Each structure stands twice: as C-alpha cells, then as structure tokens.
Amino acid sequence: MQTVVVVIHLMIVAVMIGAVLLQKSEGGGLGMGGGAGFMSSRGTANLLSRTTAVLAAGFFLTSLFLSWYAGYNRAPTSIIGQPASQTQPAGGNPITAPTSGGILDTLKKADQQQQAPAAPSGPQVPRSQ
Image 1 (cartoon, rainbow, N blue to C red):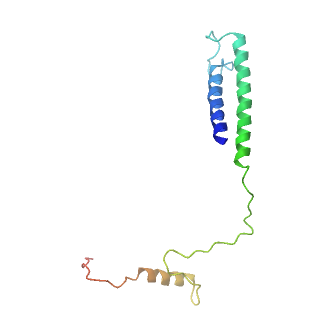
Image 2 (image 1 turned 90 degrees about the vertical axis):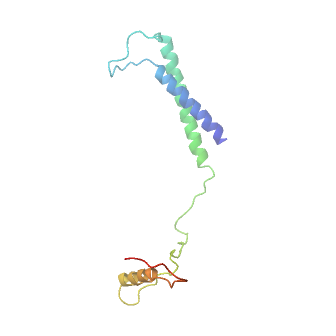
Image 3 (image 1 turned 60 degrees about the vertical axis):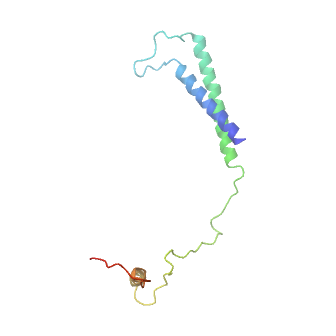
C-alpha cells in the first residue's frame, strides 16, 4: 500500500515540475518572460495554472497520507519506566569504585593492568628499541 502511494506521489511530483516549467514567467525578475512563445495563448495559461493547482493538492494529500501511514502502527513508548541497561566494558576487568585515593588513581591502575605484558607462551623474537 505504501509503495503504491509513494509511486503515485513521485509521479505527481514529476508532472508538477513539468507543469511549472511550462508556465510563462510573468514576474520578469531576470528580465526574461514576455515576448511570444509557443504557448502564448491565454487558455493554455489557465489550463497550466489549474493543472498545477490540482497536482499541488494531490501532492499535499499524498504527503499527508504517507505521514499518517508511517505513524499508524507506531506504539507510544515512555523512557521514564525503562531500566537503564548496564553493560561491562570490553576490556574484561570491570573498573570498581575507588576505595582510597581518587578516580584518577583507579583509572591509572586499570590502565596499568591492561598494558601489563602477558607471559610469553613460547620463544619470542627480540625487539629493538
């Protein structure tokens, strides 16, 4: 259903762009407009104006329908009653609350534990410094 309305909506947009581009410019904002064109009759201007108005109404209605349809099955949710999800850090060793010192000392100890080299499982290639 939504796909059909989106396709109709896009077709209306394409035809409306064409109808607006075919209309005669009457503002003369850039010195253009006026003069004789291949669509200079008054009846054609009225037809294009009416066509643009009908297409604009169709665009408005399909836009309203698509926005209504997008929110039709959406259930209201509240963030007040949901418990906070608690996850452990990816490092493996959770950081505990500081018992002495400060939070910076605790973070420094945790960083030193993560950077401590593990015991080699076999012979290692010597590294140059």
